[in-house]
Image (cartoon, rainbow, N blue to C red; front, top):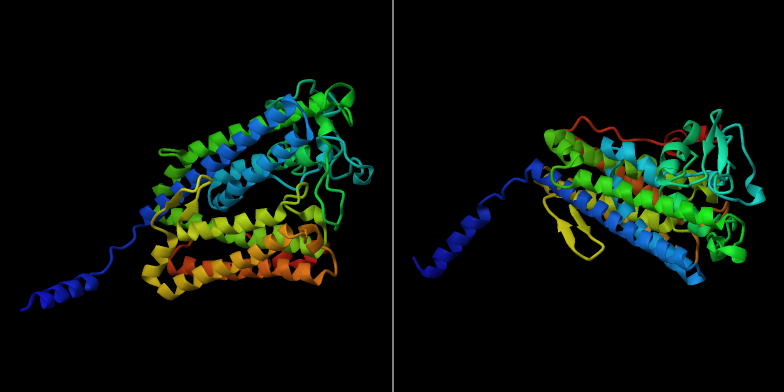
Length: 420
């Protein structure tokens, strides 16, 4: 036999050898590695925010406030991509409300416009303004708030009286302190808090500049410490990583629960469809900064990242490994192709919203009743997210998982209830 024939035969044998099966444990390890990278990036960008806040407060100026705002926007990019770890991981669900709770009754924290109103039957603390009040009464007990600390925010103010709208900590409390209220309604424009709200002495506007600065520092310090804790849970030997690997099927179920619930009930429903039904700019996720288009985009990217087993870190490094996509392709290649295509279609739709907003068509404007272009853009994202959820449900069946429960939303499942 000639050498060329021998080589051809060897090549055929190599091609005919089946690829090694993807191990479930490897897929879960990739998922945990990406979680560790996302939370590490969230921590790094929060620390940069902390530094920008400190620099601004050391010598308040318009430029310093702008830099702090830019640092906040940058910090949202990796964090939003981590939200897919909610719903399926109890350790994340139990913690998430401390860092990303919304919407919030901002009058709890600081001064608000007269149009905001005052205390209500639903929330007697809606206009507390702790920055202006060093003592206040909570559940019949007088609280000493003369020194604003992370402990005061976390242990006393946050969700005070068991009311979820009493958000005192996390990204959105910091966002409000940096931007102030967005009073533009359906017009373009974010909040416009003056830098002089943090000036000292006679240059201080709206009073209590020293306490406002103390609150901003406390909230930022608390965000950093909370992210330090979560990053540790996903490191080697961390509780979140260990829990996933105890039961491989439960680990895969956690991945798909997060993908499905964020896609459907949370993002398509509560964050997008509900706001459109109510035509309410207050339903924006990042309502003070007008950054909602980015929040939606990076949430979607987080779902896609989980399926593909890929994440690009803030320093440009690629974190990747065996993925759900690999696992599904071994059993049903056509379904894997479908899932990839659905995810890409959704990202195109969310990308259109992002591009339009960055070109000047604000998400506030998209939400206005009768704005056909805005409704089409938002519903493009909603429909893509719903459609990919239907395929996620098929992936669950193909992998033989029975622990997946995808969260719903009245806005999608029972629209009449939204107006009752």
